[in-house]
Structure formats: structure tokens, C-alpha cells
Length: 280
Image (cartoon, rainbow, N blue to C red):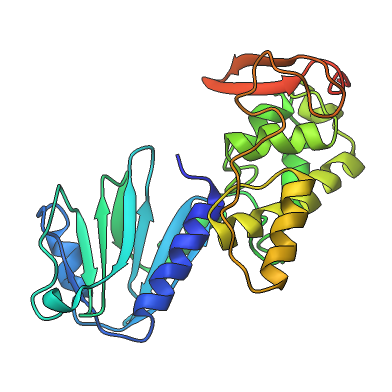
């Protein structure tokens, strides 16, 4: 399932392509025909995300709610000049198409695709934990996440993946951020100190926007420094897919040299260092 930075990045692409326009909205597959008819020809005001939930606000108080789930894909592409009038041909099973002559966005295989009102938008967001990619506010409060963590006997690795506790964090970020702060992933949430939670939150607030900018998860300080320096120079280099512990079972820890361990927790693969992450 895409992590939260992917949804924020997609929202930005939709905004750039369609915000302020009145695109043609259709359902080539037919399963979203009624919803598409409600949105077709109305002004697309903005796209935004909270955690792994994507929202596209249209005029007349209608919002398109999309959850990609495990297999959903939504690509926003420029339209080739030859297809400017007719639109590019539909390939595959397309639940939803948004197009305006210059861009086309085809949605395939989402877990959820619905037209909802503002009351339902608030309900959906309220069920989620705070999102590190959103500004801290009364409705996006990291203290609320810590309140849930500090009352739970579940492991911190499970809680970081619980979208009702913390929105947008997936498996890679949770493994890497726990390594960065030398925290054992099986440490019970109720034993996590407030200062340790603040370090986790602040780190995610720093790291995840780089995922939005580059489309790659960056968790190593040297890669982050090189990428930031390149962006300062106006360059957009290819970011290497390198991690400290994620998918490095049996390999030496980059910090202490101990063996990286692996275990399935709540059905997901968990990776951590058996040396410098011993604190429970």
C-alpha cells in the first residue's frame, strides 16, 4: 500500500493539472458512472491528502474520496497533441478518468472511489491519526497520537502502522525511523517516553516531505544531505533506494555492524538491528 507521501505527491500532481478547470470526468469501466456524472463539467477546486486518504474537492460541495488500497494506481499524464481533442485511448480497467485536453488521470483498482459531502470528509479524516505532512493544529495534533500510544500494550511497531494512531506512515518509514532513534520495534507503546515520541514525530516531519518532493523515501542522513544540496543548486538527481535496515535481513547494521533481524509482526515484515536497537 502506498505510504502517505505518495498520496500527497499525487494530490499535488492533480492540483497542478486540473485545479481551477472544469474537466471531463468519466468511468470507462462503468462502475463509477453515477459518481462521474455528478462531477463531470464542474470546477475542480483542489486535491489534497490526509495520510493514505486522497480527496479532490469539486464545486457545489462535492468531494471525490479515493483510497488506493493495495493495488490501486492513479497516474496523471500530459496528453499528446494527437489526442488533445479525443483523449488518449483507454487501456486496461479504468474506474475513473479525469481529462481536460492537456492532462489525463486514469484511476485503476482503488479500494474506495466515492463522491461524498463535507460531513463525510470530516468523518473520514477524524477517524485517522495526525498526519506528519500536515501542519500541527487542533485537528492534527501529535499529542493525540501519543495519548493513544501511551495507553496501549501493543508494540510501537504495530502502533506506528495503525492509521487511526498515525496517518500516512507505512512499513519503510516505521522500520527506518525506529532504527534512527535506536528504539526496539517490539517495545510496548505504553513504555515509550514522551521525548522519544517527539523525536519520532519530528523526524517524520523532516523526512516525509522529501518523499513528496522526490518520490523516493529517504531515511539515511548522507543521502538526505546530498539530495538537499542538489536541490539547492536547482538539480533533481536520481535518489538511490538505500535504507539502514529495511529489507537488509542478515546484513550488518550501518551504525554498529550487528546483524539486521527480521520478523513478521501483524502480517508485515519488520526489520531492525539486533545490536543498537536493543532498548525495550
